[in-house]
Length: 346
Image (cartoon, rainbow, N blue to C red; front, side):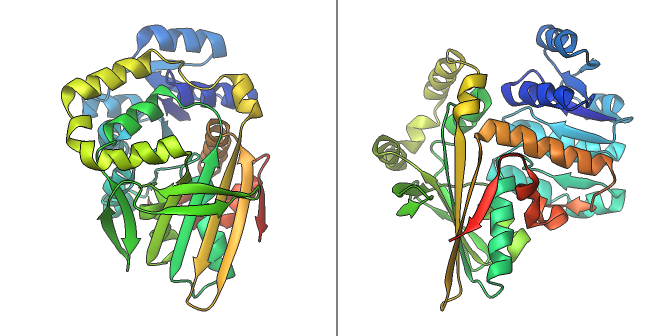
């Protein structure tokens, strides 16, 4: 049996719907009785109501579960108790986080997971499946690579959870990897013109999850991650360098979160169907430079497709104990097995 925790959120609900369409029967869980009851009725799925405040209570609810797909963000607050419970109940843990600090925190449980013979794999959605697989693909193309750059461009809106995470991290600056070590840098530290296959566009460095995970997947010591950004976004990102203290204050955070809740929960089904995501990757070794590009479904759709594919593999016994990245366990070809994905070398 498997569970989607946070099934009442935008991504969790989407994944639950897609799972049912594929003939899967997850147990849905979360703390919102009213919303989960509605979704349970809509999809004819069993529900369990519990919060993440009490680890022992989580264990009671997941001790018969083989794998939890954790979809309740912000993961900086929710991942730790769920991981602790999974270690106690010997339940495999997956999530759809994009928060670099969460990857680092879960990685610290590597030894404990190996002792319990369970797999901890954060980032089974749009972050970091396509970019992680891109990194592994490029490493195979250039085994001597010393530098890796990744970038993505997407279309469509964002969910309340994603927007809340962005708001909470707005004043935290950026991060890159240098000589194998994580190095703090300013927000929008670098700007590059990147061709995702449709002409060049400006992109800025961001502290994307692969800054942490791609090192484990490839052993490439120098890593930068970029996001395509129009002028207003680039300007705003650079402005946070001076306004970080203000953005992190309680009044501003409360205001931003109130504005977020007033917006649609996420892109509509029509917006998702129209949307596409583009991923670019580059490796260098001092002599050669190689580039690959990937095109796939809109980001939230990509997350649901990739997450369900990995859930199915775990249920079939395809696991490796400890902290893992998608490409380490399932190879760089995992992304190409996702519907609608095309990966090509430039």
